[in-house]
Picture 1: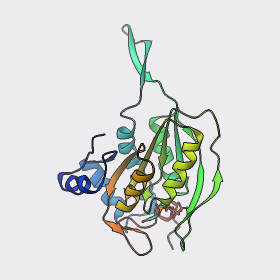
Picture 2 (picture 1 turned 180 degrees about the vertical axis):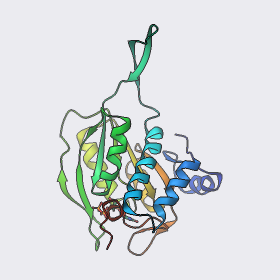
Picture 3 (picture 1 turned 90 degrees about the horizontal axis):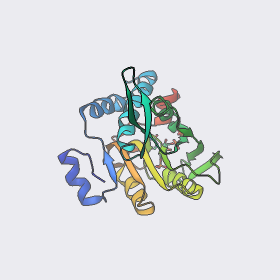
Length: 226
Ligand code: PRP
Ligand code: URA
């Protein structure tokens, strides 16, 4: 897959990562990411900005979806048109992933939403699953896991394991911001998973927060910053 990144980012990525991921390279993506990162951005604006970035990511993540031909009537004539052919599901990782659900459903109202509740233990950094609504059979054709932050990759890895158990043939991950550590982990454990990011940051700090990052995404989305 083509990596969409600025030349400066590209040099770094090519030396560290494999190719199965996309970093948005668009002025709108940079602009909205700057708003998200700003500590003075209030929660309501944080949510609407995350929505916009999610839709930009979704355009990239759905680029390879299959189409089927269908007959329609315009007000002027009959014609053959193309509509989406595949069953698409999103899996938001609660809680912060909920902030990426509405913008996907706005663009793809037919998408299924299967929730997975998971938090990162602050001491061990290990993911703890507390809610799993994924079925065990009849998998969707394409699943997009959504979570604004890919830090150590522990939460995404646990989620992708559950999605894989469901038997999904094509799995993608959309995050707003990632650390190199998280991307590398997902690529090593799930080389077939396509990863879509608005930004790839520098590193994790000693509490495994992404730097420069945006802080705690769930707290900023749900206005629970203490
Ligand atoms: C955040 C974020 C990811 C996870 C990323 O969730 O939304 O799920 O941390 O970190 P990792 O890559 O190191 O696993 P958090 O655990 O804070 O829970 P929340 O969404 O309920 O706030
Ligand atoms: N979770 C967040 O919400 N932010 C980070 O920087 C890391 C994990």
